[in-house]
Length: 161
Image (tube, rainbow, N blue to C red; front, side, top):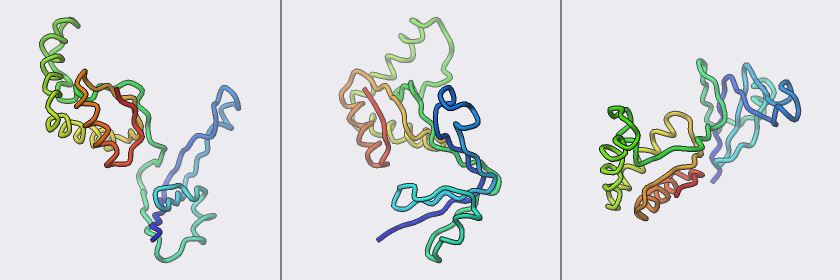
């Protein structure tokens, strides 16, 4: 059974590299746009007035009146084991690693712990619009296995090691 959702609102997306095609041809913006997603895949994107007549009555329409719809963000360097120690007291790097990072990362030798933190971490990424990331785990195989299991449950594209 097909599931289709349409998202209405301001939409900004990118078409090409501005250094290749120039700034004006590198993006597309709709002040009142419509994004149609069917079974998790984009099936249409244009001005609302252009696409709205094609919507059938069984399509869920979500209208974001006070927001901007953009593609998911990509984080190219993030350490998921460090999420619970963010904003810990600042010291010189070696002291910080010794006092905070290494003790925290040792907990990731336990699969259940790694799984719990991986799920929390991915929820935090998604809540901030990040849908793809290059993620660092710990030296423990369990940390990476737990991360990939949690990412697969959410159908996310992630790189981890």
